[in-house]
Length: 214
Ligand code: G3P
Image (cartoon, rainbow, N blue to C red; front, side):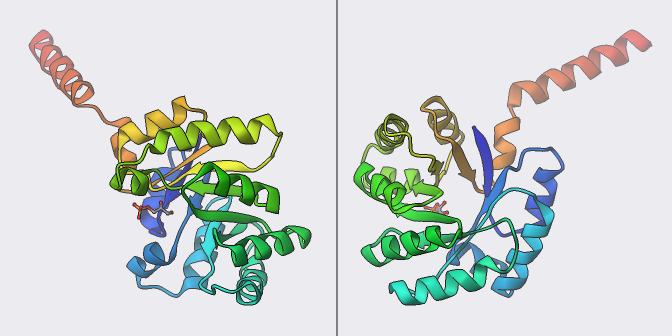
């Protein structure tokens, strides 16, 4: 499974990228607003830091605005991917953009049907939201499992980005279910490599070594 970082924080991206763990980055308007920086400036900087895809979301809601914004965003860097919301206008935009060779990530996906529509319209990535489904007591893992099965069954090349990941358990679960990608908040990422027993083990080895040396 590929790891994307769900952040626009450049320090977080640099830190985790140094470990060789960042296959891509995703952002959304909320994530960008947290950085308090110019949208184009921050996306361009991130695109220069990593070689993988970097998702930047449109704000417009009608097809014409989305396509116009997407064409502009696509010029910012070779590895930029335009994030489009899962609506009728969004699907029309994705269909048009795919014909122009502009890569898209369809976001705010909550059902298999939505994911299948996005793939069929020509999306390169589809982003089902795990945490937000859990918030309303709906089986988010069934969505990942079933969407993966359907896209594989019909040979779609569209990759699934499990988004709205909130816990280590989410990451392990979506990996087990065959999600192509999990996009993980920068604050959660260190929890993937940390374990209290690892830390306790290091401390006890060091203590024994000190005793041995005396
Ligand atoms: O990229 C979108 C997604 O990851 C949002 O997560 O935690 O705001 O539901 P969250």
